[in-house]
Length: 461
Ligand code: PXG
Image (cartoon, rainbow, N blue to C red; front, side, top):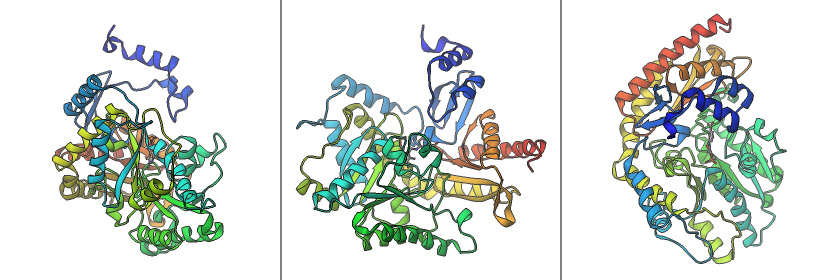
């Protein structure tokens, strides 16, 4: 039996019987059954019922090149035939991992010339925790151990990644965060800014880092970690004043600046990396997702010259690595992906043309709506929030109720966007054309109208 011959009901029954889904309530999921996705091409996916669905989330913020690129399939096939696996431990290496490392040195900001490879963004952030502590210990400053993240930040789902992240509902399960991790406020002007201007609030939010460092003692702090724009937390775009002030504070107190580029990296903001959008120079940069456009699981940590020099000259053995660090097939696919992103000018296109177009259409369509506010975004990241009273920036009482109703309506109408609380977030493949942007936003607008009807029917508005 080939995979495609099962009926949707059979797929769903087997899935319910044997598959535990990530971030899901299995009991309620099994009552409705999962949507079975069977194929992808360009910016569309198809389900087992033959519905064509426009993918406003690029898979899970990762399919930057869109679906169906033969070059990536060919790269995997050829590499599997040539050398499907070899490790990079014990004084060995192989051509795909060398090519990828050199290409990353070329494409990332100038301070980065080394990469440590992993299989995911979570592993990249776990690597950061071990690497920054090793970096300070190697220089005789072993007390510099604490990493400071932000509430509502997301850095993965391993114990380290989930601890660095500030998702309280994740911390509640499994006794997190681990010791040695602290959190400060997220730079979310709409909710926390009060009467301050975005500029002044951005400075205030950054200065929470200074207060935290002073409370802990700079001699105990290893690094600050943040996403340029918080993705899973709801596409929270910080005011422009925020990141330069964070960088100033990190430098003043000799704390490493770690900018998690797992979502923002590889063109999502219209720059190759989110740090370039905000004009800052991180010391370390976790990467994943767009590195391979999701065609293979691969991540890594870009290591700046400042850090690499210490690790190489003073660090000795770094006792860390995964069997599949620098997997040849994943590396070959990442190389093919990065070359297409570069040679087809896709990042430039997002910066110059399609990104500004998406942002303009998004604002034109949603900003005037009576229940939508904080209509925001950069490049191919966009969001809006359902609010009870725009004039007072008042959110709905039970965050998530309206968002979930809206998300389900989108889903039913064959358009995928994520709900985060009562925000709807959008991060389409970077290859989306202006015509496809028009189609996506028109369908989203129709779903917003249907959501208002549903909210009225339930007495929520
Ligand atoms: N850092 C950031 C900034 C991320 O967004 C990770 C690290 C972890 O990467 P891996 O490859 O281990 O998943 C992420 C992942 C969501 C959602 O619901 C977001 C992510 C993962 C799963 C769900 O928005 N981001």
